Length: 277
Image 1 (tube, helix red, strand yellow):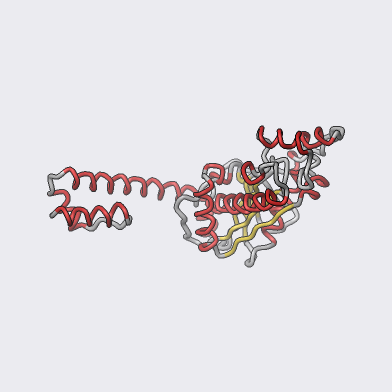
Image 2 (tube, helix red, strand yellow):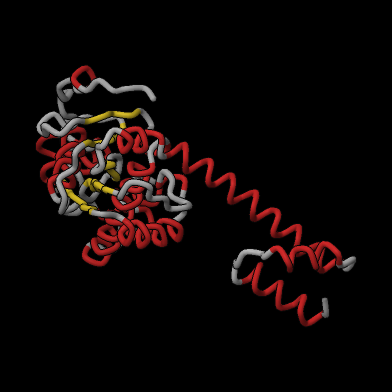
């Protein structure tokens, strides 16, 4: 194999990510040069990573595969984002994939950086049979509390799907107002592909909205911290006061506004049993 041919193989297999054919692999194995060995080592690493990712995706699809195998084909994963920020709405998403769908890299949105979430958002939307995002506004959060507002956003996401789901997979929640069969999975965004995909869509949709709100309410840093109670946000809140999109039912906002503490919200945990998975 000439130096030019070796460079072409390196570009094709390592830069462009094409598979290594049997004939070329045999030629590399017979080539004593370090460059040939480096290509083989890189291809071996990629194959190992692909096998590991395949195994991870099979684990993530165990709930979906079990339902698909029984003829339940329209399985929707549902998740929310933005429960703990001091400002902005809470978002939720619902995603339905066709049986057998696999998207490498999909995972709990909290484990991914912004660039990975943005890339996967496009692929999820292109691959899904249906997807939908729902929100619950700040005024709703302050009226019914963040827990119930999160459920409201999730219900809106499910109701916004263009196809009616036959089964819902949710991250440790149940939507009692919906008659659709449901399964609540503790840490579901790390155990189910469709829930993980929903977590990505909910997160990216909410982040985009917070960037928009940053332009409308400058000085708080919404585009950077997305409303979470980081030091920068708390400092700006003390300096500027609360904006119209701050959650007045949250303690740091109430303190800045000089409002008294709210009485305890009614208990919610006992009413929402979840399945450990």
